[in-house]
Length: 431
Image 1: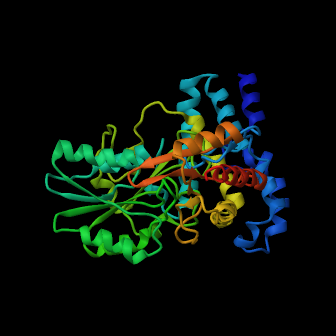
Image 2: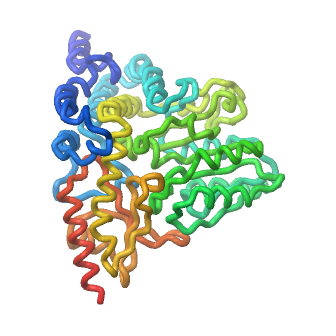
Image 3: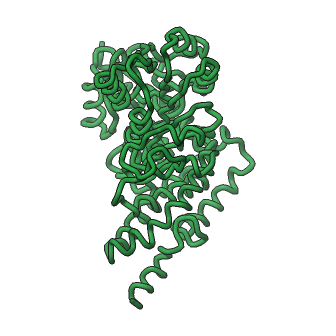
């Protein structure tokens, strides 16, 4: 028992991610504070180009120096502090799983809920913690009371798991799932809003919006679509898998009813972590995806009845939130947008290169699609990896055909310079 107590005290494990003794405070607080003195008088846009400041952030990650990872739109790596939190709490758990999980670590979810709510700008009673955006949004999609003939409006550019969930409801229950088809980039909010509005009929109940389209990074005018939908008595679901932890916004300001996200993307939380937000007045009407003794209750926790879960991952989320807040959401957004524009501006004028994403800040941030005439997305993706050790992802989906490039805060300028060189060299070979 004494050895166990000493271990816990040494690691600061009982204090948790939101105490003065958090791992972030132990490992990074001093260096972050020193670095921020350089940029505290700069605007977020000015700070985005301060390489000395961002080098401190870059050093907080443990990415492979032999591989340039530019597929952060898929899964982002966690900074060292998050990895260490998961490892340490996993060590603690395995000292006596049923005791440490249920009597110690299970008590950490409520502080985490409060901290996520602070970041999201909402009540903690509207936040459920789960594993990813698919689980979050499927909870809502399957939990809504809809009947045969009720209509849902989405798009062909939404994420496949959400599309398939709606199609499954249509197949089983006879709801009508309508998909708009956009040709991105679009730099006109009115055009996008009008497309949704024109699809509405008296039978329409739900509008499903992807905040940032994962294929090419189009930022959708969620607030304007939601305002239009609410004026017509419709409910709005937002897929925020690529926006939360990247864009500086508060969820309630979007005007939606339901919001789901993956925390292992731009928040850099542990892999397999997600979050569901439901407006307080809507919680009772959504059936939980897994069983609960109060399925029509008003407690957001009814969506967390998963049984045994990874409590170390939840503590790791807490350290990711600490990391995010130490940088600042707006500063982080502007840095990643700066990185995207840095490389894309250097290749956009090549006659063989096409950029599939807007350069305007209101329509894009991190994700950017690129293609080279005469190369398929698969060929370009393979050439970047095999010849230059640059990891990206080829996208062929509906009317989108490109390679998706997604930097993150740990991405170095020299890595993007290598990307630019690679794209130019590959494009020059295509006569």
